[in-house]
Amino acid sequence: MIRKIKGTMDIFPDEAALFRKIEGVMREEAEKYGYGEIRTPTFESTELFVRGVGDTTDVVQKEMYTFADREEDRSISLRPEGTASVVRAIIENGKCSDPMPLKFYYIISCFRHEKPQAGRSREFFQFGTEMFGSESPAADATAIALAASVLRRLGLTNVKLHLNSIGCKNCRPDYRRALVDYFSSKRECLCENCRARLDKNPLRLLDCKNPDDAKLAASAPRTIDYLCGDCKNSFDQLCRSLDAMGIPYVIDPKIVRGLDYYTGAVFEFIAEGIGAQSTVCGGGRYDGLVESLGGPALSGIGFGMGITRLILAMRELGIAEPQIRRPVLYIAALGEAAQIKAMAIVERLRREGKYAECDIVGRSLKAQMKYANKIGARYTLILGDSEIESGKAPLRNMEDSSQTEVEIDSFEI
Ligand code: ATP
Ligand code: MG
Image (cartoon, rainbow, N blue to C red; front, side, top):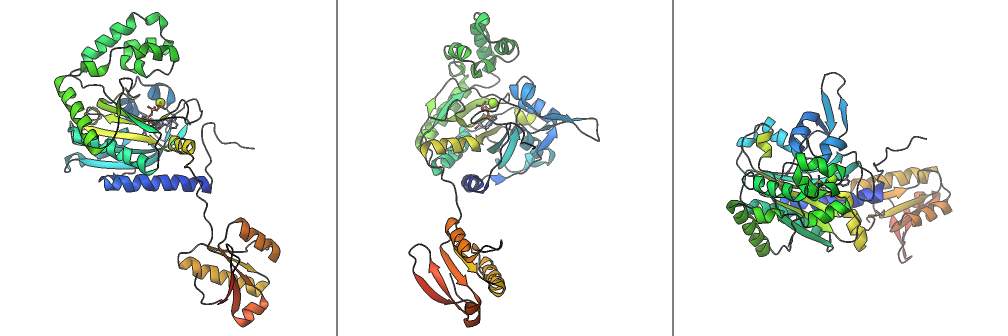
């Protein structure tokens, strides 16, 4: 018995239909906000993620699925996120000189070797968006509004927007110093990971999931107290735009995001009541990324929304109904001639765009009727030799058991 790899999932039709419904909302909303779909490869040069995501991040250090390419002497990784690939694609395809802003969205699976648990898997599904070429807080507000409108349309009233700014390359050094000072005096109390982070990437300390470290992080200096004039103005303007657009938020200095490329505004949408993995959407501004991957100085803002976590949040509210499809018609047929006629009728209805079924496994008439009931057929048509001969058959409404006689070659449903 071969089993699936730990941290992956099998999704059957009812649940896949729920995914499709959610993804449909994402596509519709993204297009309304002027984002176009982009598709990039599932795997890329490892170097892209090392440079794009950051070589001191957990994602790159511990979580990537990396392997040697067969033909060439190079290292390849399955994408752990979507942003780096989109940035590579726009640079490589010369899109950086197109009229700005550039707006892209994608619905992809990502791969991270993490400890599987509720809301955290090794292959996971993500709706992501990226916008390039606007430094204005209006761009941040647009990205956030898109995420909020997807969540609103899905009915997620249990999700709250948490907003912060982590500053730019001008204000970051001062903040970094304050943070290192604060944590250095508490070095002995930090987890092993965080001691290493203190030297390499102190901002990451604020993101530690270890409860003791999280307690220390709660009283750490706050990025918003160290913002330079420009960052402060942008952040204020973003807040005012959100107010004007009717998008509620809380300012939360704990939000710093786990990937290296963020600058300026960062945000998370956090769901109540779905356990520890409660961030359904995370994003922010990444103004240095395009340049650091070899492109021009082009600012960016984006987010990633985890689809499985959305479903958990919807379940919590009781709004994640399985999407069961019911055929409009089931034809129960007895005998070879009737069976062939049944095939012709369902084919006619399917060409008209309807979902119709007939027996294709050789059930008895009684078993066919039972099956029609089970799959929730709205109508049934019973065909035998005499119906084929007369060209007429009884059409039964399964909801109220009423019955009418119809012309089998031309009836409409
Ligand atoms: P986390 O809070 O789980 O550490 P992250 O900051 O690593 O998330 P991002 O890289 O920003 O996550 O990804 C965007 C979104 O994708 C997350 O907010 C979350 O909803 C989802 N996500 C991330 N990692 C996983 C995973 N391993 N399994 C399921 N969903 C995930
Ligand atoms: Mg993570």
